[in-house]
Length: 287
Image (tube, rainbow, N blue to C red; front, side, top):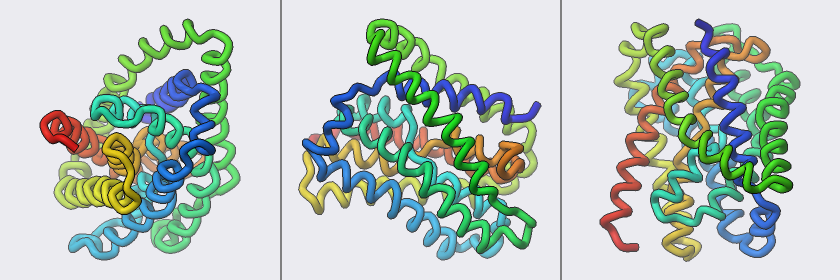
């Protein structure tokens, strides 16, 4: 079974669900509370890909990494956190309104930054494996799979808020089992490769999550943000949209290569383990 037929509806539902949670006042935060928004976007859009590239170049096993895995790692680093980050922010007693606004803003901005960064990455390492990025097709696919579902969800919430809440309550229960199903199918399809590379990729992706989440905490401390804002930045900067990365990797219009999606699969597993541990820690530590 081609993973694209599973991940496409998952990504579409996740983005539609994000739209269902958006309200016009969420975008007012950009004006009323610009500091945490700008700091969060700095971490997500600029620092996260930089940290990922530095880790790739400095990681002890990086010399043995396939160019396909390097492309996959950078693809994860360029994909902004989806609606799941809003749930994690709520569980960690963070600033959910800030989380929703950051997710919406980063999803729009990365429509343009993701193709630019990935075009550079593939020019650096993709020639060796004959991988090229069709930038125009990537931009159009992201608009169809991300902007359109978010816009539809936003309109539903704007005019039918009660229906939007009911749909959201259903979708938020479906998202995690759907991702687990995707990871399970993907694992059995690529079991040998994943098992062989799990040690190096697992360590690398764990380091990426911890480093970027730590960057979020450091930025919040440097700019004297509140404890709720700090928890939100830890999650928003440390949590990426694995479903989007898998979609781009597997899409017949873009890379059409499931090996590129393997880092995102491993990232999804490590991300949930590490951030669930962080959420648990926030229950016992007073900030």
